[in-house]
Length: 201
Image (cartoon, rainbow, N blue to C red):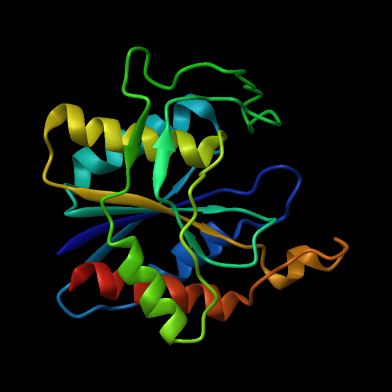
C-alpha cells in the first residue's frame, strides 16, 4: 500500500508547524507492507493545491493523509468533512486572504473523508492518545487542501482514500500562550504512526 502523507510549513508567526515535524519524522520510519511518501506543502492558497496535485500524479498513492495545525485543540482530530469555501482569518504566507470564495466554482458544497476516522480515533484512544473526530476543518488552508483533494479524486474517479487530521500545538509553541493546550512531539508522531497502520489494515 502507498500512502502520501503531507504537512504544512510554519505560518502565522509560529517558528514550527507540528504537521511538518510529524511528517519529517514519519518519513524516516519503515513500515511493513506500507510505502509512506511525504510532502511539505507551502501555506499559500494556490501553491499548496498545485503541489498536492503534482504529488498525487507522481506517487499514485492508495491513500492521502493530510496533516495540519489546529493550535486551539487539545486532541488529535481526524476531520469528517471539507467545505467548498475559502474564508481566511489571516493572510497565508503568499499574502492571499480570500473572503467567502469557493474553492471550486460550481463544486459540491462538501465532501466527507474516506479515511476510517472512527477506527483512527479508537486506535489512538486505546493507546492513551487524546483524539476525537472534528466536524469542522475551518476555512483556511487545511480545509482548502482537504476539499481540493477530495474533489480531484471524485472528478477523476481515482481509487484513492483521503482525509485530513489536525494536530495540536507542540509543547514549545504553547510556552508563551496562556492556557493553550499542546501535545508532546513524540505523542503526535506516535499518533500518526498508529493512524497509518490503521489505514493500511
